[in-house]
Image 1 (cartoon, helix red, strand yellow):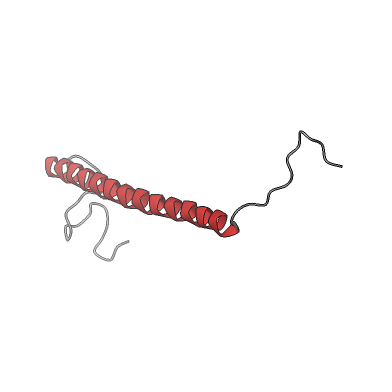
Image 2 (image 1 turned 30 degrees about the horizontal axis):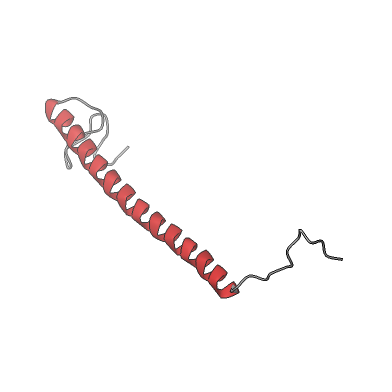
Length: 82
């Protein structure tokens, strides 16, 4: 019994097209994640360089904890490390 107002069932034109759209979207999201990751790493590297420069400037002024130069003895620690 079909009603005159309801159109008959029409199958999708191409399941391959739907799968292509799905994989295209997943590829676009993977590309977006890779670009975001690259930008994030560049930003983190830049921030770490700034932080290291700030720490070195403070250590040069004699401000800061644990910023002794490499090879210099640490106050309160013997040569053996204990």
